[in-house]
Image (tube, rainbow, N blue to C red; front, side, top):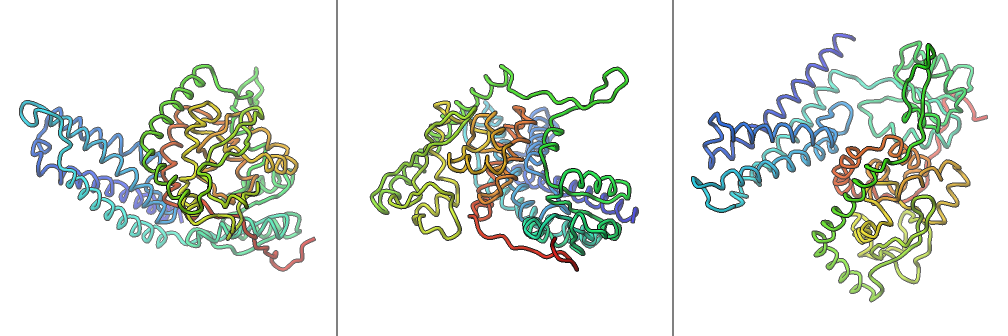
Length: 458
């Protein structure tokens, strides 16, 4: 088993290096046709190649990289293609600038865009090939892990099992059991990986101890204690080992930088997307003659109420303030398209410019939802420690119908681990939302309930 894992890691490393080398060779091989100086050892060649390498590695890290074995093929293709395309665009711009000289172009020319397009097409094809081949090799060496799911109810099983079953090559569910069943330890012993979901904290701690002792892989859902521990650090108080958690708030420097980023990004976005917004306004007006923009009261930092701007996506007479459900007949034809690609949220750039919102932060919820969610989860109010945002961890990793608790955990994780770098990373990752539009905009539906193996629910 140890030899197989070592072989698998070696194969993954070789494939990563081969893929990156291929992307590098394709770009410089194609552009070297018109720029033969790229094949000579010079300072400009070195600068250009270093730009491609450093930016490529950084962006692949931001988007998740060549994560064969842990991700499905399509998300890997999306992330790798995005990182490569942005790297190509920047490096190509640098090439065009460097060719502006007395020896080449006497003024700036965006050179040979057709070669750029050719390079991108070939690179994406290579990424697709490497991704499917890499996952095939990985899962040929690594069979699915035998998993057990330990939970507290049939409804909780219905929340987690469909998510696990989306990765059949990684996980094979062999048993399900209640956390308080007398056979729970035996079930863990027969498994490679243990999923603990909605298990009471005290019992979960005991089961985690047993899993750690028996060297089992463990997955468990977040509770508030886990969120707090993420923002804590280890300290020594004399000879006592302690965990220290300091109440989080942005420093003055972070507030200034974040606000400057908000103003710059919102102004740029309004200019760049103005043609798109103009077309959307015409389409909305042409469909039913109603209002183009829709305003709704939302909550931001410390519970302050503000009016959020959105393109109207529902029929005016049916715009009841409640969350969208599957096959919701309130949504217009134009609205369906706008919601699918999140275009309906573009007017919120005005909210950001005004200071009501920020680019990255917890999404502003409807007042009705906040009241309902806070009754069920008193911790929901903690997310109001940060100004409401257009995008964020919950918007990128979650879906429209992600449970309020899971969204809350993502928002609190963002707050506990806040940094300017994290904001920049999430801004870049927001592009991936458009590549999984059909998944990220899934409406609320009914969850399936599952039975425990060989026992009735108590």
